Image (tube, rainbow, N blue to C red):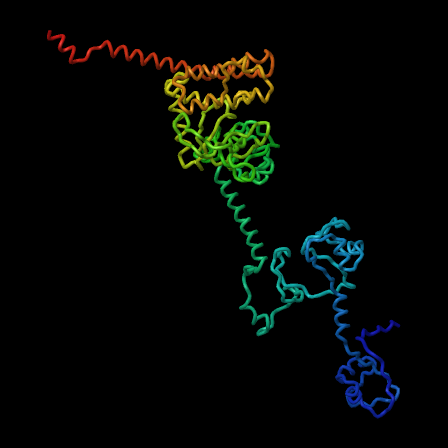
Amino acid sequence: AAARAEPVLSPHTVYRVEGGDETVGEMADRLGMPVFDLMFLNKARLPGLHPDAQLKKGTRLLVPQPTRLDEVRAQSAATHHEWHIVPEDMPFKECARQLGIDPRELIRRQAGRPELKGLQVSSELLQGTRLQIRRAEYDSAEYCHWSFPDDDPAQAEPSYMMARRLRPRERRGTPVPGGALERLQPLMLAERPPVRPSGKRAAFIQAIEDAKIATDERRRVLEESAWHQVKEDVLFKKEADNLGILPSQLLSLNTGRLKGLQLSAWLKRDTWLRVKPGEGVGAADSEAPPPPQMHLVNRVVQIDGEDDSYAFWYVLTYLPDLQWCRVAPLESRGVFSRPSPDGHVAEGRPRWMLVPEEQGGEIDVGAGRCHIMEAVEMIKTKANADTEEWDIIGRAPPGWVEEQCEAAKRKKSKPKAAAGEGVDPLVGAALVLELVLRQKNAEPFSSPVDWKGLGLDDYPQVISRPMDLGTIQNKLRKGKYSSIGALAEDVGLIWANAMEYNQEGSPVYKAAAALKAFADKKLEPLQVAARKRAEAEAAASVNADSTPSSRAAASNTSN
């Protein structure tokens, strides 16, 4: 015979009847419980039990045990995991100490959680991290949240309405006329209603939707156009993946345009890529060149994202095809004290010059990050940008760069004037003195020789007329030079004194010889121009003296 199954009973105690004159109802009242609870618990053993039934002496009854609040809480806790939210950033060991759990045991309790993969005793926990401090004693099958079959649990808004699993429609049978299914038919929807999330989840889902719309728009533009502009610095292969084009195919479309392009190349922001071959595309689109290039070379610019290091940069190299620039930083060195040779007044304004090459600072940037500045070259030393000085006025207004380019073209088309022509010789000489003082070995010649401090007791006997660059500059400012020849004579006296007093081959002798060659080369065009001007003025004066006035000529004719 099959074994009899033992019934599953709720918590209870066993009560033995002492007398024979008590009914089931009276016993329930005395124990303070509903009579039907008492009957239900004993129904399997005593099927004929009812409230008026007389209990025999010695009868054993199962009495339901009252449920205590602490027991209910313990049972509920046994079916759920217990969590701890880290209140602030802290070491894992410190968190385990506060919880009173051994660190290794706490790590073991996090097993199976992919978000904490690699957790170690020495790890640092971030604020808001969820740690499982107790696992459920047993798993219980519960009702599930209601959702649609195609919902992504990570993104869908959960419903807090519980629902049982529905039977497939084919198993439900024919709806009963007037039944619940027929009455609910008008409420049925033909399609799924839109999800309306709330709170932080709404912003998260909106961001996903915006990204999808942006991707679709990029795909549409790409399908309609044969060109694509790179939005940020990126690897060539990654940009090809973003466009959905094979890297080798994209490379073949742009190899002829972008010199040196490779699969491992790094594309700069605003680089233009051809994404379609010429055939199969509209003629206007396939033949359209990229936008006009920027005139960046030899320009002063500001660079987005580089304001913390240097304020302004000078463009050394510019590759239009790759929209790539090599730039060097500028630094402020004092202020301007005189106008430029062209008459640009910048007195009291900061003087900007290139940072010395040995200090470094040169970087590569995308042309799209560069903003051209309206900067005036005060010395115009095109051959050597290291000695150039700029007066930076501000951001270049629209059309300023084009005007500068046109002016440069017009200047090149004019006949080239002789060196020094059209410039006041003494004004040009002041600029030459500034250039000489900026040379590498000019420091010993910038001020009078301190022969007493240097212990050169015989210096006054050897050098009868001391001279230095600082003294010449002071005399020039005070207007004590009447001609460029007198100034050049004093400049030559500096080198002559140095080469006379110092032994040939010494550092000072070599520096004087080098500076003499440099200064003579710069001053010679000014001296030639001054001589030509003097000769032209003398010739004009002779012609004026030899030509009689019209009134005198008329008198001689009448006589």
